[in-house]
Length: 404
Image (tube, rainbow, N blue to C red; front, side):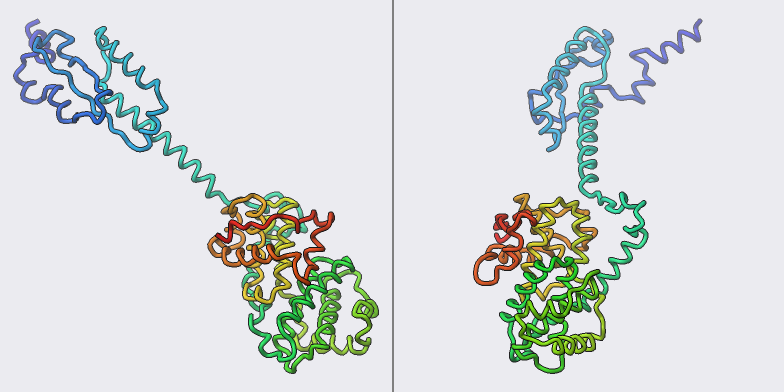
C-alpha cells in the first residue's frame, strides 16, 4: 500500500518536485504559442485546466486567442456565420465544467480543414481546366476514322505544309498581273465552284495550284491568260478530288469561250509539268476538319469558319500564313464571334499546336475582312454564304472586340 501511495503521488501529485522540473505550466505553454489577437471579437476567456479541478486557487487572467487569418479563410469567415455560434457553445460548455480541447487548437484545426477544402476545390477546378479531351475516343470502332494513324497523319501534314506555301511577294516576278487581278480570279472561281456543286476540297486545291504555278513558272503569264490558268487549275483539282469531273467544254463555256479546247489542254500539261505532278499537299481544308473536331463545333461555328477562311482565299496578303494557322485562326475567330468573347480551349491548343497569342494577329486580319465583306465589287464569298444553304453565316456581326 505504501508503494501504491507513492506511485499515486508520483503520478498525480500537484506538488511533486520531479514534475515541476520536467514540465512547464500549461499557461506558460499557451503564452509561448498565443499572441495578441488581430480581431478582439474572437478572443475567448477560458479557465485553465488546473483551476477547474481546484488544484490552484490563484486567479489567472484570461488567455487571448489568436486566430490566424488568411485571404482564403477571411473570405470564408464573412460567409460562415455558424462558426461564431460554435465558439459560444464551446465557451458555455467550458463554464459548465466539461473538458474540451483548448480553443486555439480548435480554431487552428478548423482553419487548416478549411484551407485544405478550398485548395482541394481549386485543384479540382484547375484539373478540369487543364484537361485535354481525346477527340478520337468515339471513333475507335470506325475504321474510316483511322484512329491508329490519325495523329501521325497530321504530324506529317504539319511537317510538309510549308511545301504548299508560296512566297508572300511572288507577284513581283509577274510584271503583267497583280494582286487585284488574282483577287478577281479567285472570287470568280469561288462562284464557279459553287455553281458546279463541287467538293470543298476542290476549291482549296484549285487556289493552291494557281499560286504555286504563278510563283515558279519560268516565263511571265500575260493578263489575258490568267483566267486560263484559273480554269485549268480547276480542271486539275477536279481530276484529283472529284468523282465526276466537269468536261473541258463546260469550262470553256463558263469562260465565255475565251479559250479553245487546245489551249486548255496545253495549259494543263504545262501546269502539271511545272508542278511536277505534285498535287498531294495539305491545304487549309485538311486542317479545318481536324481542328473543327477538336473545337467540338456546331453547325454555326463550322459555317462561319468556312466563310471566314474563304474570305482569306481571295486576299493576297493572307498568303503569309501557313495553312494550319489559317485554319486555326478561322475557327478561333468564329468561336469568339458567336460567343462574344475570346474562346480557345486547351483541347484546341493541343490539337492545333497554336496558343491564343499566336492566333491573334491572323485573327484580327480576318475580322477586318469580315467587316468589309459584301462591300465593293468582290462579293462572291459574301453572296455564297448569304443563303439558307449556308445558314446566312455572312450576316453574322463581326467580332470587333478582337481588334481592341
